[in-house]
Image (cartoon, rainbow, N blue to C red):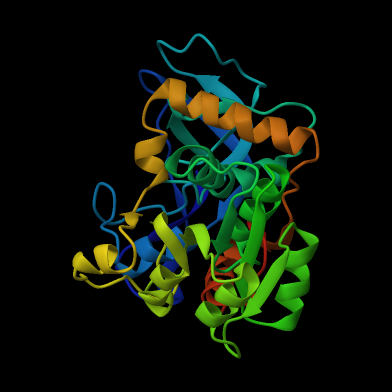
Length: 325
């Protein structure tokens, strides 16, 4: 028997049940891993509440990110073996002490990166990778706006964009979070609860606005985010922490300056094995060289996952959070 957290019905944090499950032997192309750390992400709350449909129906084991060691391999797996350190960021079923997972979803973890860091960086770090290097390829001289700059993805975006030579503006909810964002690469911070972030962006940029807005907040920052973007710039919406953006009049994009808008997801950007490997290598390179640090600021026991969800949704967390089986 293996300890796991399951959802039998959608709802609040109280629907997360800690129980024992039985695991079959790994099947064709699968690997059995023992988790050493499991990543907590806002997307986990979307599955818990039912905003996103459960993969394979209920009951389900939430969690898309983790790190651990290979225990055994199934038929057809040749590039992994027992004892290998591995991590993943795109495979539902992570809230468990052990699990079976398709080998193609795993990447090997170098010795330079510890387990908690690996578990706290895969989903958020790979998200930052595609946003910065593929959705809108940030280059030296660009100006970017990062909403929730002190959050898990936000802190990585700020560091990495700074490393790439961009001017980074971040919105945050408190002075403490502003300090944290600045320590992690943000050149300017805006207290969105106290300040008009559109006016502040115009002030900071001298009216030139930003090349791209990276928005993981959603409803609360839209459509004002569009007023922060230069003509023919991009609005990249990758999360809904404040609620999903409702349907909007596409003419807004024309009226605000022939803007581009996209709602990307890691599932699609990392769907091909070669893309996933390339993205992970890029991420691990910048982390290994110290250009991007992964701040694991909260740790919870797996059995305390309900409290972790409460703290995450109350915006009482910063950086990455990991669960320990």
